[in-house]
Image 1: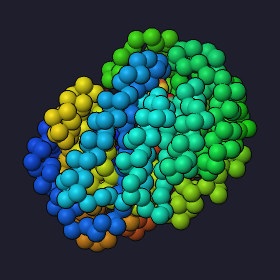
Image 2: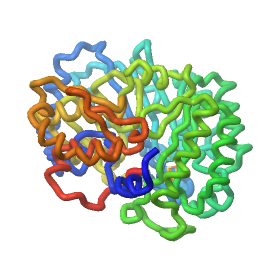
Image 3: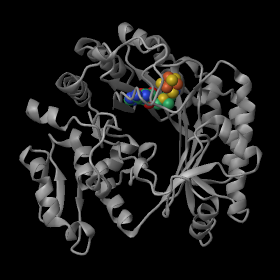
Length: 453
Ligand SMILES: C[S@@+](CC[C@H](N)C(=O)[O-])C[C@H]1O[C@@H](n2cnc3c(N)ncnc32)[C@H](O)[C@@H]1O
Ligand code: SF4
């Protein structure tokens, strides 16, 4: 157990390390499309057609605003937006196919994220899936995010028919005061209904998202939410730390102020309590923020040190290429990263001109490749090992000096050329990554990120 002062000390702004380098350190703030296409084609031209890719599709619409939300979304009740958006996604996919000399991609992993993917009607979703799943790998891992208040049996049956077996539902918290403050009213009965329906249809990996540190959240309230969640026995549970980023997202309809948000040790106690309850109920902790039943795929991958991490969080995907479609979507390749235009209007406009909507990105340096592997290993396995030729070895003495405080505080241990996060230090793995991250080391820490716990 870490001391209170230690917890306070490390509760500093930190990136989530879903990418390395983090998005703020990317080296193409305006990606020249010609350069992007060249890099992309260099990477794809010699790949066999059977080489599998992962696909992420961002579906940004939601019917109402949850005021805690940090996702990239657009609030509307106007469902006329569906058709042009799906048209644009299909066009974007075809542009990638054309760049690939009209060869089809073999899709092994597909994730529909949002916003709220289930904002879209079954008919529009089918139009999209028909095109994207023309050629899929035998071993596939398809997943979708659903809002419990807006996910129908028809939509879930459609996803199942297209090979989806993983579905996650945003629960957040059942406490009435919290739900009112974040403008997200949803009942236990509704969550039970969608969970039972998904199970009846045949989904084998049902996940619930909980968030700790929400405004007005109390120990008793969160305990009750965790117990209700356990009662429904989802295969996975995400326990996200509330990322308070008011300078990024608007404050409209917000039913809380800064003082209503649990912070520091109070927030940490919420996490510890929820984690203890989940472990007691038989869930295993997977990387950061995630829990799974021992029989579940991610939990098995974690136990076999085969967990992977990309922009969607933890995954079992092995593909090194992730094509991101939709407004704000991020793609990940061996050569680097690319992000699509964030504004839906700009995104639609680019595609109506038959232009790839990529606007910024990063091209990896040789050093980036090495550091990316270490950061991923720390985030997934809580340890990393380096060989005598690695850049970590070259910087070893300096790093050891710089990390001494983390060692003294019980967060990090070195064993020869292996860095290990201690059991108690696990919630602070991002602080260790920051200490190793050369971009971060080169600049003074700013307050651009959310708190690390
Ligand atoms: C795109 S939403 C899930 C699908 C659907 N829109 C919903 O809300 O049910 C993704 C998840 O991100 C988490 N999330 C959103 N904003 C967050 C924030 N500011 N801090 C921590 N987690 C957040 C929530 O748990 C949410 O369920
Ligand atoms: S939490 Fe989900 S439903 Fe709520 S605004 Fe964010 S993306 Fe939309």
